[in-house]
Amino acid sequence: MILNLSVKNFLIVESVYIDFTDGVSALNNKKAAEKSLILDAILLCFGYNLNGYDYIQQGKNSCTLTSEVDTSKVPSLKQIFEDNGIEHDDTIIIKRYQKIDKKASFFINDQQVTHHMIKEITSKLLENCTFGIDFSNPTNHADILDRYGKLEIYKQEINKLYNQWQDGILKLESLTLSEKSIQEEIEYLESAINDLSQAGVRPNEEKVLLEEIKELQKTISNQKLIKSALKHLSQVDLNESFAQVSKILGQEESLTSSLNHLEQSLINLDACKKILQNKVYESSLEHQIFEIEERLFEIRTLARKHQVDVNCLHLFFQESLLKLQKLRKYTQEKNEQSSYNNELFIKYQKQASFLNQKRQKTAKDLEQYVGQIASNEIFKINIEAIPKKLDNVQFVLLDLDMKNDIVASIKLALTEKANQPTILFKQEQTSKNIENFIKKQLSVLSINHQIICI
Image (tube, rainbow, N blue to C red; front, side):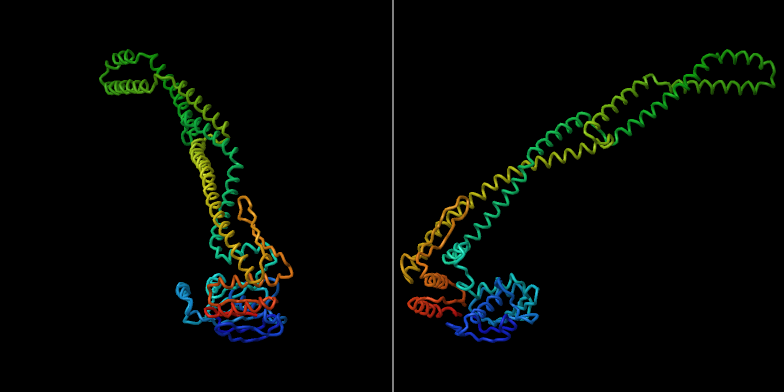
């Protein structure tokens, strides 16, 4: 229950303080605009955003709206306060501080809180069934009907499903638009992987092969030198030469030592010859180079075909495997998204059909309610089916002369459905019978609710 309201520098009101009571609090100022401003101030203080004007009094830099509220009849608020560390007892002080060209700041018991939290808290305290609702705008009619029938929770779920379905459609479209190019990429990667797999490319293979050729060419050069040396050695019969030298030197005993050195040299030379003979390869080194050059031609051709550096073929192979895996996963994602979209649409249609049926019944109830208060056959609710969407709801006033009576009756219908402890109600200029009936009903409602009305 709202206990009081303090207003400073709000539009034409420089400062005002109002106490509210249980039951019905009627604002009786002769100027209707000033009475409406009080309701505006309550709504703004409680976190509503009312478009259409600047709240701050001309010549002032800020305005402050403060309200003391009894929360003892709303036990569910206790948990919200505790979860958010807000100190409280049976009453709280709600304050909205607004500066020029700045976002509003909200406080509960001088502790700053978010706008979202204020709305969460005040939605359990205040029911604005009648004020600020534009009945003349047909786009609001479905919302008004849903509020009367307490169907908002169904509509929220349907809107959530609809938005998810629409997001899914956009995602599926983006996946489908590139499907052809992706399939072409998959086919290319499969071909490239097959080529590289059959070729068995290795990391930095060209560099390795070129080094192998270089070593083989060096070996071939050494082979030629060895063969030339062996040729020269084979042209001289060293054993026969040594035998002849032995006969000559053996005649003089003083030359025996030289003969021994010569014999050792002959042994060493023979050992060298054997070593050189062992270094002569039987296989053709030129054939090995030819095979390596063939391999170089093969991997270089692959590199040109796939437009990559020849020494990066192995890396390209690994990257292609990963990319192919991602693209196949993408195709799977597309199929899963399509299936998910179908599931969402079925759920949406089912929920929408359920809500539309509820709206049909609620529309009849509201027509009957208005007919009992005002007059029969002056108010109808048209519900038009729209494929793949919620039905279109439109209020039809069959007697424009009784517009105020009809609007007042709808507002009263909404008021009677309110669950919050405080209700704001704005009376229309109606016929005397309607006015008296509304006063009577508000008096009944005031037994369990605080009614603030003009």
